[in-house]
Length: 432
Image (tube, rainbow, N blue to C red; front, side, top):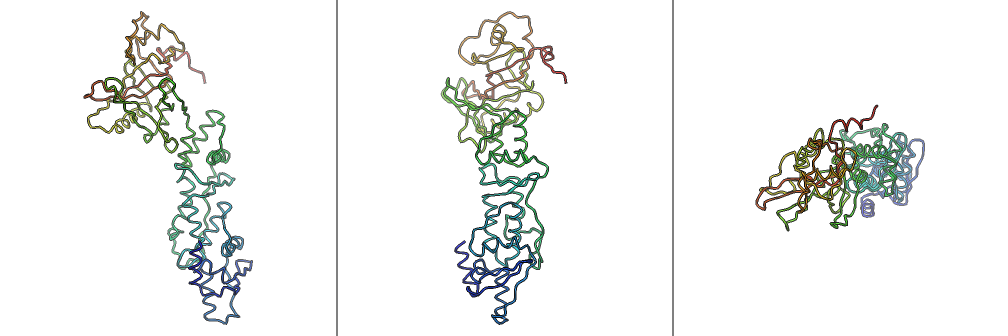
């Protein structure tokens, strides 16, 4: 602001030592020519320069303006060289509106300061229900948000601070209010701010997390939302790679990548990885969690199909993987997807870990290693029908059996809770 003040003093002809009277509402302010010149040209400097031109310097009129004296106290402090920072959203809009009102053709240093405050998002004030909250510098992904966009509608362009209004001949600025949200929970928003300011927060239960996520999405705090979604990051000591477990509905296309392994083209040629947008610097091996009885494995245990919204989400995810591979000779197969089982796959069948039934299931499936399948066991046929996966953890694999052939997306079973008969599902139903 120093350069702007110096140039203003050169263009302002008011004697720096002379005192000028300005009455704002019911209060009288006396400011020196140096203070008025510090942010000129303005309504004040033009008025008193004209008075000096046409009147006796000893008979200068008092300038009267019908505005709020409490707001002008802060503007006077700015003219006297003090740093001014609004304490809340209500004071911010009053100061900004009056600072605009008191300027002339150019935009004052104070208006520039308030505009930069909005554009750089150094501090915002949000009113949720009846409580006012300060929002300080935000991480990428959390801005622009509900509040920065709300302020920006009025303040982001200093040349058009009141969109749709002609400033020439404007008697007074319109009444404006800071963005407020009377229909959201102030307590939940206070917890979101606690997280935004870098403090940890104990998530009490699933309902508490749902409340936080719902308001994150409402206020467009995308980075914070990614930190709050259910997930688990761990290091796998067997393959010495890091993994992230995340639910299907929380996967974002921008976080999907494919780790390609060209050392053994006859086996798995790619592994889908994931990095949460705005949060993770490096991707992790993706462990996809699908719940809700929405995955159905066919009789032979070789293909997985889906129902409801899970089907559309999986179809979209497969298309994202196809685009990430970005190769014209790669053809990604449509749903259903082929299932690969491994000796490390943990399986619960109808609520039990029955070694005989698990061995029979794996004997009929394509095993994800080079060991021969176990000898098929005789059963009563209950495992021959389709299996419903109540809950499952899956790796997503890109497989290319032939180096010159197409690739297909496959699902590697990691942890499954299977239901083999409608009676078993009905047994676990709860009454309302």
